[in-house]
Image (cartoon, rainbow over all chains, first blue to last red; front, side, top):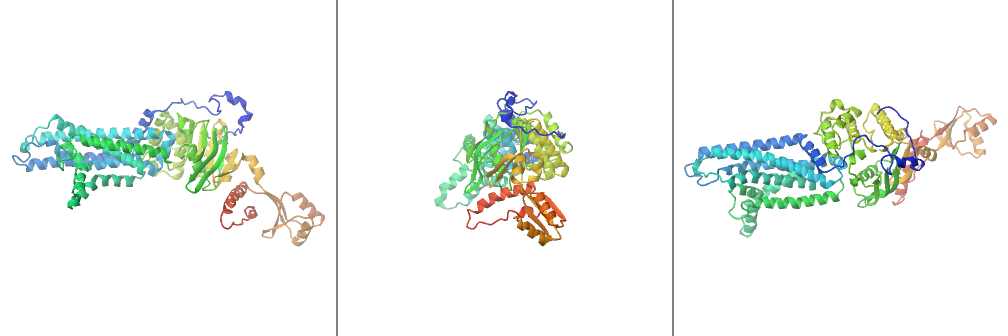
Length: 295
Length: 317
């Protein structure tokens, strides 16, 4: 390419034979590389390469696995060594996975935010949008790849922890044998919920366009309602306090383990539908802003 | 071919790009010239569909960028050399771009070789120097072997060898029939590469002409004279109706190409000349004149128009 060739300045009007050149009515160079009509599959492949080729993915997911496994094992062994004959009567032995996943969700939130917001920090987003001008497709591809990665990693980790808990705490303190429902909620349920929480963070990252800002907002959104509720001692605020306790993200997560912080509020699989609704609204917002704003 | 029609971009009160209409044609290098903040990058971002125009339209071979089904094999662009995730290797950066457009994986190694980054392909982009980042950006632009190429300030941060390389690269790309659109704030750089010139200032189109025409229309010439018999020479020239200006260091300058006339006058009057040299204002000066006019036009809108000395540029040369 470095061989010097004199340029050929030509006005299109002076070269009518160009009309017959390959490339239709617009003359010019035709590449030997086959032209491919791009689709979502290409964007998914691209985002998969992106997410696995940065170290922050390995770090956040690595810390996630360590937290969930470590806290899970620790709490189970503490319970086992300290329980009396009836201390856990009729309780679900899988419930001790909760603490690890609550802390671990911070890692998933961070990874979610970084998936979108870091591109704005580095300027990579312009390269991405030039390569794929359909902004909705970029967002959909990022959301899909991230959701699948977060779900698979959370499912593997929470499933492993649930198996350890089931075997370690079998008959300890009169704990019951987990039902199929208990198993599903403590593995598939919580994994879907955590992955959706991460997806919500990814969308917040796309809206805020600033990694540190979006991570702070999300961690605040997880922790603040519960902390604020604890300080709402006043009688007049009792209803607000109750609502915060019931619907804060930790309370929602605890629903999957039947050890709700309060007896009313969402139960069973309700939190999943709440988070699904929130993510859908956030997706619509992020998509609309992405279309409207300059990159 | 890139066609702009009344392209305008406003940020609140500020007009960044103001009704640009011009076309960038295939088979030649089109230089896009303007001082810093003239709106070059904003224009290029609008061509690529990154920024929405406030008014007007820009089309690539008749279509909007967002309608292109194969964007990277159609248009390759170097916008910002640092528009790369620093934690990703050069190879993976190009790979994810190739995948997004279904470009064969083998192209990644090819373009890395073209820009001379094969040795650092697996290194993280954040460790790259500005020049290496620029080369990576050029590799990304060439990835799809596109028919249209856009480079925003490509020579920035490159060493002399790199500058020479990019010049020849652009010329050879244009010679293959591609459309090459290059922005720069350096007229001297454009003079060496561009066949066609589009000059903007304050977001407005100042010139859209071939390089040769631009030079002809915008350069001014003068004659520089040195003589030990300075006072006599001044009288003789004055009598002939020739205006003379002091050029410093005892030299005199006469605007226009009047060297022959001055020589004849000096000979007829027996005046010794130590120097009689016709000079042409450089392209850089022509460019500064052109863009300074845009600045002046803007200044008139303010409370006090700033007077400018047009000759200052080439008097000092």
